[in-house]
Length: 456
Image (cartoon, rainbow, N blue to C red; front, top):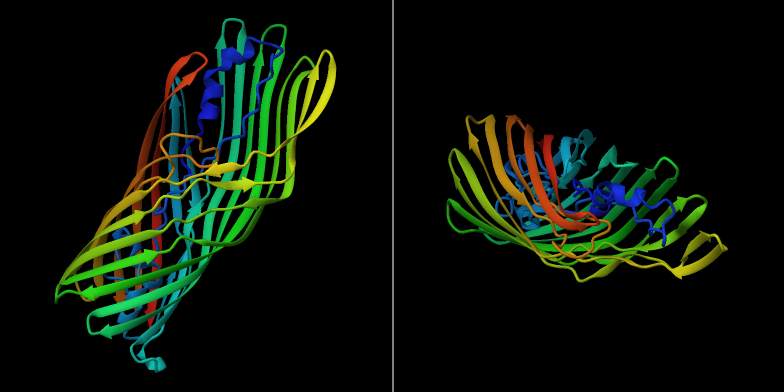
């Protein structure tokens, strides 16, 4: 999801002397779009009163209200109507950026999305059928960062200021149904309306000065949009024996219904009254966000005091597609000693393509008594952003997480609480005007989970 910093920012910070040495740029620098800090990883948010504490490894064991998300076939296991609510969870992030002798860290606190799920029981006269309704937020990313760094060379000083607030979220109301074909063999299907929202508010200033001249390069981007899509999934579960259980879930590629975004951009490179300014504004930019086909498979072992499950989750690639496109034009104003000229150019579509990703998750629980269980797990959350090629909105970092927690049952109520620790680091080599440089981006994150469920 978000804990990275674009190469364009690091490049400008490193290239300070190169920018400041030329008071009047010839030709002016094309102002870059401010970088986004959003990482669009698929398994960042874990939901459920037990599922989140066991790293989301629940394809074979899914039951209750949250089975609509992990495997709709598990709804058929419901022996009573059940309501599950996951309250808004908290996340504390520490992310760092380092390149050369420059480095910065930021600690932030934010709220993740919650979940509310319902499954019907046999008392509704549905026979072997069970039905579920789930409101969830499986994607929730809200990066914020600000930094200022001064660099210098003989006769020049450069200041870089960067401020960003962004968010990527997905709100998915989902209906599901499950049927037990024969004892131990269940099938399910779900259909959801996905509303993916992407918000960006980013500003970058690069000021270079000598004893006689000042040059400033700046760019600002604001966008706020939502795309609605239909998401259809199907699942199956098979009780191989008394102790062994298997499950699989298939999610079809999302079907875009409609989506748009507002967008405003301004970039400038000015010195001594000369330079270049680019502007763009459109309140109805076409916005797309494609969710790929995915398949999950899990194998679980259960015994009297506990259970454990191993899951593999594969996400297919997406072809290159325009994330943002517009029929409006970018206006370029150039100021030179010969005068001021204004030109219009077509808006260049901002494209994205996702690479295939395979994640794994292992989770389980141990029953200390009829009332208390201990839960834990480990999982990977790899990035779909390609290792090479431009990704102006999303950036890349592979993540790993571990979870631990406990649940307590009191009559028909189950309450749980736990933590997840997530980490990742990315090293990138790239060329700058002053030679080869290596950047490193790091993340350390702690997430707090708390939820409860009630059976009727």
